[in-house]
Image 1: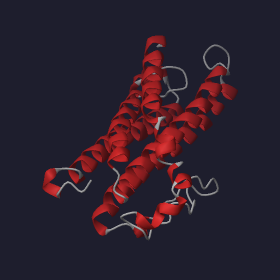
Image 2: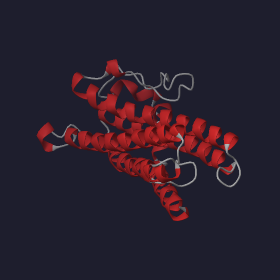
Image 3: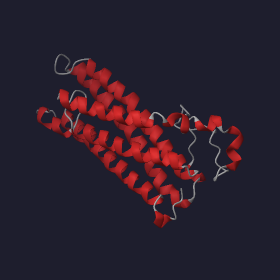
Length: 222
């Protein structure tokens, strides 16, 4: 289990390392180009109108501003981010219940800390990569699209591992053997693993879709 946990952490760290340099290129980019917005390919998109995610308002996102050919792909990019956030939230709640109800060596308090760290890091990475893909295809910007092509499959790998591993607060399919007769934990394991594995498949599909948009058959839009 320790080896599995280290593998998952290494994959997450690799994803963070490959996309961290995108912050100044993507989310921070509007602040550097306030005077050059009118020269963008989609000049009607106000990238400094920060309205997403709700309450936090870290980036600009409005799918109605996109051409019809991009709406489906960008919507899927966003769904992957939303699934990541939702699944991390469920995992924190379930881990809290486990720590409070079982405790001890079977569910130590550090699991709650680990789960909270996952809930902080993974949605942040997912939002950054979503924005690279969204803005990359909207402008279009080849650098942002390239970062999306690297970051999205790395996140797909992380999601796949989270859907399989039985380590600590990670309720992957391999944890079914330790669920015992508890119907609740059987449902928790099946739900969390299904969400992670589904998100992994969606992330792979997103990578395929953005590659098709960038293909010669599509006129090499970027």
